[in-house]
Length: 220
Length: 263
Image (cartoon, helix red, strand yellow):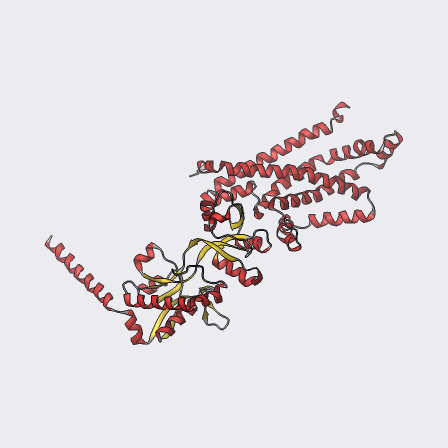
């Protein structure tokens, strides 16, 4: 009944889709976490006005559907003269989305650092940079690392939506193959497995990075 | 054996009688004697045939039916049909003509006769007036939006040069949005979809560039009605020459007849 062999001729389509998804995931993960880190720092330690601005951004993104954000950027912005390619639009949408969620996650980590710990660093004569990286961010990230990992995987899985604006990602490949040979069961099963492998791989990468970043634990 | 031969010859004779009878019945003559022409039109397929706000049938097919009746100088009796029963209505002689966005195919050609085409119906590439494309080879290096899995998608994939950037969207509405928002300046779709854009945003009405698949509408009539067929063809030819067909196309499809239509 099942005809997985019908999918072989579309190997290229699946592979290029997989590559696009991986590429976008890696890029948006890095940019999104960077954006989240900056926003979290502002929200925790910044001026009132900038804190408010970040709060507006975070609430706006976290309380609207991703597909609406994506459509707004792709179909809406050309009305004011900003025309982005499907790839650029989805890159920006994914980054902004991850940025907002990771802001809240990282802020939780930052607020878990007791004031006394920062004061202790000052007393010990650590300079600003040392305090920031070793005393504030590293322990803060360590606390929220699993949550951040999950959020990045959620964004990767959520990127399936970008096929709607004709980005040729993994879901686009599945839809295309399915519309050509009508083997819906097979093509979506293969795609689901590929996403599963991607998610596990992403978690593995995060764990490896985590081991390096938080190595001081083991030295102790 | 003898009996079988007898039976066969009898049935053959009867069949021959029927055939002769149907050939003898000249529908065109009947129409003129009756002073009424019965024409099957759709009621559920705008812009070809639908019910207007005045509860009267309207559309290309209705206009065409009126035109034929006017030219024959007989009364028009409109018979609403669906796409499933329009050919049976013709075969059972409940109507004289079917003007119901009828396309031609070999199966239908075995059952009924067709006139020359009276209205355009095609899949094609449409786009901004500023984009210069005349044929599928001219698409090279350009971006075309299309609805994934549609016939036009398959046609493009099969025939377009490799360098065409085909952007596939989920459904017709998303493809339209991509065109209207300026994300793509060319789309492959049906001429009715292009009409829909022209109705919603006349300023952005896309221009037909070339056809991917042509399946114009013909008037259907019972088989072997040569006199009727000749008369209908003559009237269509006359309407084409006088610009009447183009007027109907402009009115309902918001676009002129495609180049070389009816040739």
